[in-house]
Length: 213
Ligand SMILES: C[S@@+](CC[C@H](N)C(=O)[O-])C[C@H]1O[C@@H](n2cnc3c(N)ncnc32)[C@H](O)[C@@H]1O
Image 1 (cartoon, rainbow, N blue to C red):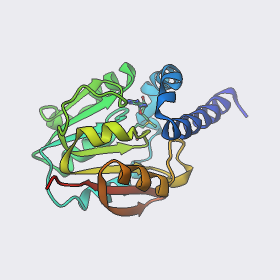
Image 2 (cartoon, rainbow, N blue to C red; image 1 turned 90 degrees about the horizontal axis):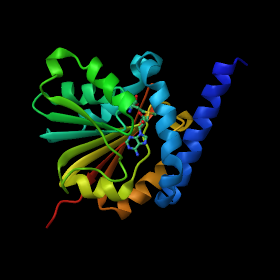
Image 3 (cartoon, protein in one colour; image 1 turned 60 degrees about the vertical axis):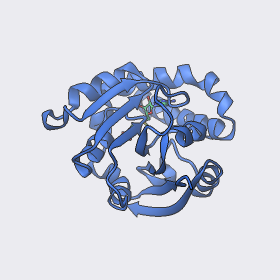
């Protein structure tokens, strides 16, 4: 095994370890944050080239099932913005914000933004554990291959809004949460009406935040 392959393998293991730890105990994120940031900052220049075109097939199916076009979409852990561009094309009236922990990914996403989307899609650096947005700011929040911070997901999703969590390689995805755990946590944080999608080896879960009575 070459050094590069070994590094990739260790990186994937670290991502799974981090996901498991943080989903079980969100307070542990502080201990994992700096290394996660260093890992993805380093990957930013090559990230887009490593992505298969069909990596977001399950996400796209879930977006097709969102019954009401959102005004504002948040793509959390956006990386180089590929899923944000998909959402912007799917909802041509929506403003789309992509957020990533690392400056490297955010810079790359800005550079890669197709000119026709530039007016509606923006990127900013922030930590999904504590987001700089008002409560209920987004009618759709999506996460592709990203660790969910359930408390913040509940806070920033508008009442009656939608959430999509997708994994490009299903259970083989380094950042992966078992579906039953995902449903349990989302259910405990005000989400309901779950629907599952599968395509090209990937999976996605669509959920709705309960509307206020
Ligand atoms: C596996 S990559 C996925 C990128 C993109 N969504 C995709 O599927 O191509 C995970 C991304 O989430 C970002 N990330 C990890 N933890 C984060 C956090 N707490 N807040 C914001 N971004 C985070 C990483 O920097 C990285 O770019």
